[in-house]
Length: 342
Image (spheres, rainbow, N blue to C red):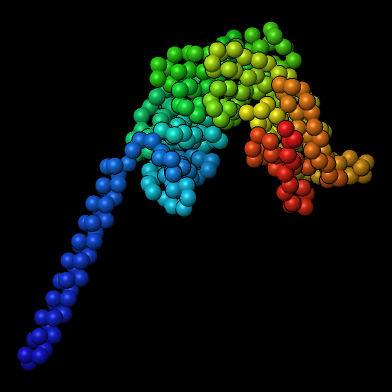
C-alpha cells in the first residue's frame, strides 16, 4: 500500500515538474520573442535582407515581409501587410523601409469602385510599423487620380518617382518627389518630350531603374510592347537626356541601369495568341528565319552581336549578372554568359 502511494506521489511530482517546465519554456519563448521584437530596429543590418511572399502580390491576400540572414537565409523576423495592390513592383524593399501601394475599400467584383476607395503609398520599417506617406488616388464621389499606381523609391530613400496624368492629357508627366517634404524635385511633361523628339512620344513606364549609387534614374516610352525611347535623369543637377530606342527592343528587354546597355531582339514579335505564335514560328522555320540577340549602348550608340539560334521567335531570356556580364538562355535550356570586354 505504501509502495503504491509512493508511486502515485512520484507520478504526480513528475507531472507537476513537466508542467512547470512546459510553462517555464512557454513564457521563456514568449519573453524571447517579445524581446526580439522590442530590440528590432527600423533598418536592416549589414547581414540582413528582406524578402516577401506572395510574389507578385495577389488581390486581397496579405503579403508577408520576411527579414532574413544573408549567410544562412534563416528567417529572423516577419510581419504582414494587408490590401497590397496586385501587380509587379508594388513591394520595394530598401535599407530602412519596405514601400508598397495599398488599396482601401476595394471590391474585386466591381470595375468601378464605390465612394471611399483609396490608393495610398505606405512605408513599413523593419520592426513592422507602417505609415501612409502619400495619397495616389481616391474616390470621395467621383474617382480622382493624382498619380498612377507606378512608383519607384531610390536606393537611399530620398526620392520617389511617379507618373502624373495619362497619355493625351495636358499634365502627363514623370515626377520625382522628395520623400520627406513631398515637394516636386523634377517634372518632365510628355509635351516637352514631344517637343524635343516626337518619335518617342508614348506611354511612360519604369521598372527598378535607379542606378546602384542612386545618381541616375531611367524611364522609357512605349506603345504597347514596342519601346520607343528612354530618358536618363541626373539627380545631382536634375538635367536629363533623351535617347531613341533602336529597332528590336521589346518590353521585356534586359536593361543595365549603370551602363545604359539594352538587349536588342531583331524581329521578335509578341502576338499574344498561342495559335498565331505557332503559325508564325512554322512560317519562319520554313523560310530559315531564326532569332538573334545583340546589346546596344544608348549613350555611346555602340552595338554588339551576342548570339543567334535557328529557333524562331526565341526571347533568350537575358539577365544582367553585372555591368559586364549578360546571362542568356538557348532553346536547349543551356545558359551562357556574354562578357563585355572593357
